Amino acid sequence: SPAYVRGLKTLQDQVPPFDSNLARQILEDEFGTSISQLFDEFGTEPVAAASLGQVYRAKTSSRNGESRDVAIKIQRPDILAKIALDMYIIRNVSPILKGALNLSTDLVGLTDTWAKGFVDECDYKSEAENAIAFQKSIVNTPLKDVVFAPAVLQDLTTTKILTSEWVVGERLDRSKQEDVTVLCSIAMNTYLTMMLETGLLHCDPHPGNLLRTPEGKLCILDWGMVTTLPNNIQIRLIEHMAHLTSADYDEIPGDLYDLGFIPKGNAEVVTDTDVVETLAEIYGAWTGGGGAASVNVNKVIAQLQDLTATRGNIFQIPPYFAYIAKSFSVLEGIGLSNDAEYSIVNECLPYVSKRLLTDPQDRMGGALGTFIFGPDKNDEETRIIDYERVEQLITGFGGYSTSASGALAPASLGDDASSSTPKSTEQLSTLADQMFDL
Image (cartoon, rainbow, N blue to C red):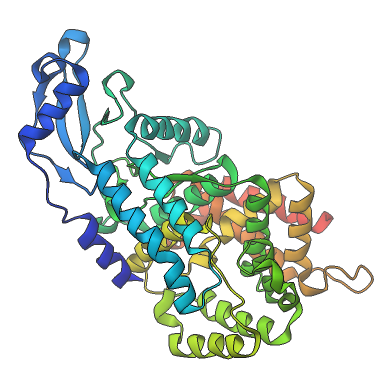
């Protein structure tokens, strides 16, 4: 929600910097030489400060070739020891909280997942490799011309120092440009592509890390916190999103069980009518848009309490989902800041449509069947194509194509928009023919 994003901003945007003299000493110790030998110019004060480090603007030395503007991130002194102490305390408290609150979630496993991420985030060489890996992978997708990570200068990077190109841009959440809505869609499609396709998910998309460049591109900063998902989880998540976006709620409990949100000992709840109806009502309200503000939270809590009273605590948060939840909840908050009716479920439709229509894997064929036939998909004698869903699928693919091109949606371009998008129209016409052939 917007309130959640505002709360994060106070943590992320108001971190006091540490002493710049100490920062310069750390940099010189890392490279074994003076700053003047490395840079023609070096800022006297940091341009940004965060919990793990702070950033200075500089110009590389012209002695080694053409001078260029760069951003230099210098790690806070002794930060790893502070993280270790914090995570040690939380890990020891976790079993006590789990017992006291009667939780099914593996809090120790969740803590270990977070701890590993924080430790990895302190290795700036690893962060540089993550940014490079993203840039290499995104060039093989339709998003290659609209999103990027800053280029890394590897010869000026160590475990405690990260040097990358200086990117001119404004924060996405503060931009007043008319293409912000499209850039929010680009961000969503990029994060879905990372999570479900290229395999490396950026897990720190707070507003300060998403920039709109003067060219109207999306730049993603800060690649220290990432996660990866195994292929079977990726495919199951796509199937789950297909069920969500097509409102096939009967399949939701089975999805949650396979994804680890329902413990293995509770398989019977997958077919429990009360569970199915409760989840359908919750997901239905969420899909309508507006984020948490549109959901009757007290009613949801009462429904879940009723289920707990009769069936025990049947839900848990699998450790792998910790970073996914962080990433997409922040993206939802940014979307809601721009559009009060923003629906993160509906925003997944363009990417889901693209995967269902273009991915040759057998399980994608099953997910496509779920989408276009609905709940009767398994009854080959009586099932019929739901043409409204076909239209939804084709429209979703058109939305992905628009997002990937970086163009404004036709509705925002005025009455002459239809004449300026012949390729999109041709694509949709071709896809419609393919769907009817199917």
